[in-house]
Image (cartoon, rainbow, N blue to C red; front, side):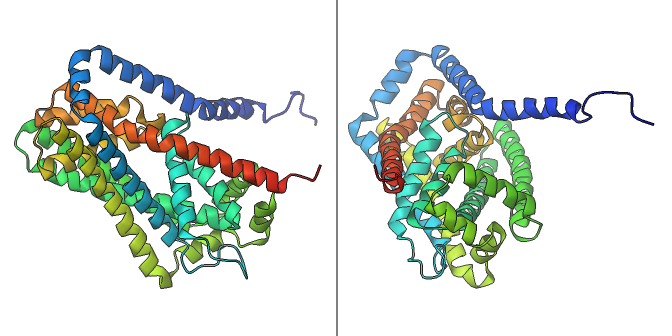
Length: 365
């Protein structure tokens, strides 16, 4: 007997799916608006004169030092990314190894996209993967290197956060102890997430992940020569197996140590800013400020560049060390100076690479 109910049976599911997809596309924009609102509220509800005076005390020398330290951090992270493909043949048989300088340049581009454009904090990784194929790297290896790089970066940040929580626990006061307990609990959840991400790459089935990455690579990379290399090259699963191979403990350890050094160097930015303001800060204080503020910023990854969230994190954590809100906000604003100084040129580099690639692939006219 025929079913008297007309209409497609899958219609009820399509509505929620479209709603979720639409929400995911608009998440960076919503995060930007929320972050701007929070940042504006923090600024207008505090003494603007105090914020301006604190920022002015940093001076040009302090800001230049801040930019140099950030450039060093991005350089170190670029070297860490390069180590993940060291000794492999990501461009296929006969392909030339990719220069380390390419990874450094693309790491600057990744940072610039993440901190200056209204995208979630992984938008730069998508752009970096596309640009890496311009050096002849197969799309599968570009994706695998990015997945491994992101995993190591998050894992080392969790370790850095745990270090900050441990140092915070040594401070007197119930507020410090409460924040330390909360941080450890969140870090435990993060450890579980990192372990699951690692298991997905190494132990579990990656077919679903590979389908999604292949589709993303086709949309991002487009019909070009690198895309052809991605189709004829190994699968993402095979590329991940090559990156995480047991005989590659040396490069993996080097990448891990470089990322850990990058997180520790971030504390030097805080020390420079506070020293220029005439505020003495111990090693414990700058490590706790950097580790917890970065953890808060990373937790709010849908908010591009942690707008407002970073400022709120410094106000919250800085209060434990007697920093008033004006100084904390000025500190956060100072840390955004390298975002602009280094980010704008990196966006120009991105557009230059895209333009040159388009000229190479353009049909003769």
